[in-house]
Amino acid sequence: MGRAPCCDRTKGLKKGPWTPEEDKLLVDYIQTNGHGSWRLLPKLAGLNRCGKSCRLRWTNYLRPDIMRGPFTPEEQKSIVQLHAIVGNKWSMIAAQLPGRTDNEIKNYWNTHLKKQLRRMGLDEPPPGPAAGSPAARHMAQWETARLEAEARLSLLATATVSSSGATATTAAATSASSSSSTVDLKACCAKPADIFLRLWSSDIGDSFRRNRKTAAAVPAAVPALLPPASVVVKRMQDAMMIKQEPPQALLLGPGPGDDSSAASNETEVAEALEEYQMFLDFAGEELGLFHGRHGGFSLFPPLDVLAEASLDTAFK
DNA sequence: AAAAATCACAACCGCTATTTC
DNA sequence: TGAAATAGCGGTTGTGATTTT
Image (tube, rainbow, N blue to C red; front, side, top):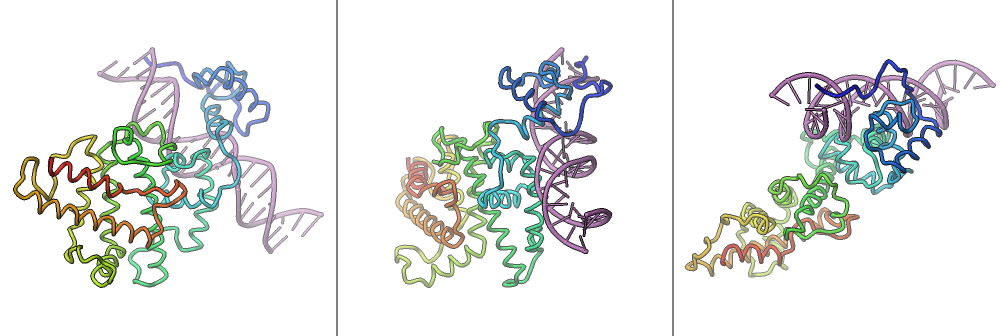
């Protein structure tokens, strides 16, 4: 057998806008007793409302940590970026904007941002426009927003494992939601590498490789033949997961105990790491990414961390 | 000045996953 | 173990405010 019904629809419970008196009853009761069971709350608080209605009123409007007022440009940008990758997952977006509710963000999107983007021709990523066309620029803007949003989400995800020694993180960790404890570690750690691979495969990656071959500033020690992106990506993944789950093997380089080719592989690792850092610097300048309001963080692991992890794994 | 149109947002509806009995 | 309640979520609606005609 189940439980008794939450709301008895035959009792003529009140619907519609809440009065200030009702709000006060609800706030006073919750501040004194907590909400406990939403089913019982209306009766205990003296409200002629359904428990669900009380819960929604509290979570969407009366909660003390809700920040009312107009959305800041930063918040608007965040919403657009996050929506570009998660779609109408308002609760996920709200989790990145402290003090804002999913309902508020949803309303703001539907009444403001969607229209703004539509006016700009950005309501949907344009399909396959010609290079250099306005549509192509729009597409690039979308891709840039998407990458930055993915970076933020990845940062939050990796923040959940930082206490175990994985990737260092920043103030973004403070906004990680309580539900993050259920995040899959492998998925979290793989994400920055995925973004790296996409960057590497994008126009920015092409531009980087072109410039690398011609720029006078390129150190002579860097090989003309770049290491495959997969190598760098794999080393990133390994470096970030090393303390959670020691990698079984690297794609390149010897296994533990294989000393015969250690020196040459050490050189390869060093070259890959150097390439990695140069590319991140290049992409960061191109996109102006990864240095947002979270405070100058870098999504990707610092070179020394990466090097230590890769070399430790390969040669110890 | 009044009616119509539009905007903004709180609240409700209905669905789903989870929890409880 | 299954039925039903609960909580959370996204979509939609209702309504008051504002702007336009």
